Length: 389
Image (tube, rainbow, N blue to C red; front, top):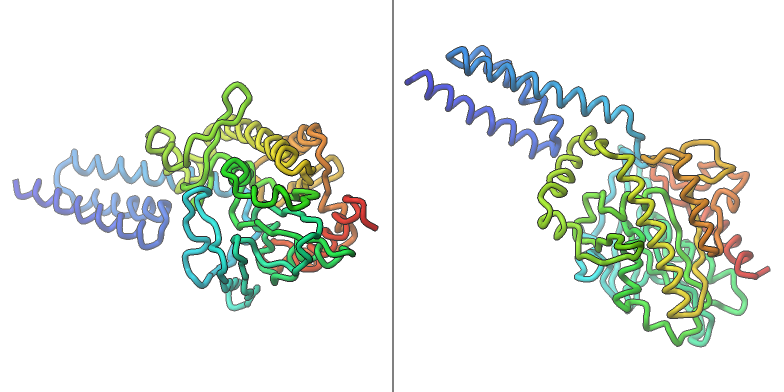
């Protein structure tokens, strides 16, 4: 009896240590390492062959999980901004939003600092106007209007207010053009579709909108299915008979479908779990992505009688190397772009607009977002695409 009590006591202590290590390091992998070490300790400390065999089995299982995760992690592409630490004041930014999951507050400002080790990558203050759009240079009220919608690339993460693509485009136009920068870091096409459906852009219906401009990157494929720790409260869509249907948020779906929730939760902590069924999931993501882009084009036409302009940092037929840290293989990305062209929307290649320039000039060091020089080059190309000189 005493030996059995000792085994239960040790097991509880081991579990608490494993849990504490996992929470402290925020890593299931290190929790598995701790489980393997404590499993070996259990083989020595437990009394009774069944308990020792159980400890040995737990050790083998934990080591198997560690090996599988390390192998899957080795095969996965590394993030361009690995090692960069970003902090904002206020800390929780963008704040929660009942429609889009998260969105900047109107008439606010945010101080953003990014570091790489001891090196300062950038320190910028982002300013937002009364409609929660990032501030751009002023223009007369009767000016032609251009809406810029998208994620951190449209937003201009890491550059000053007057260095974003929208601001650079404003300064290039004579007479002045009015630009509205609705970019938000972390958004995907699902956020933009929801914003249209919820009427968040309706205030511009009578304001001479000449174009709606967005910027796509391969990471958007994962975002349309909520594959990101920040996307739980974001809008979720499915395809029913080829038509998009809003179902609520990703968190709501995961509560309704526990298996989907469990797969997501385990995939967040184990790379090999995430890799299970990845090809099928990528095909689903591509279908959703293309449907969402078609929806954005239709909404721009219906509400503003304006074209959707698609800027793309995306591999095409002329690009030979894997693009950035995308988990989708290049042939599949190229095929997706070919299908996207079939929408007939005007498209602008970032690679063409910045041809001949080095990555050091085009990207914020260590971070991977476009530099002020890059947004200027793209703004020039955009002006030419829209018929400017």
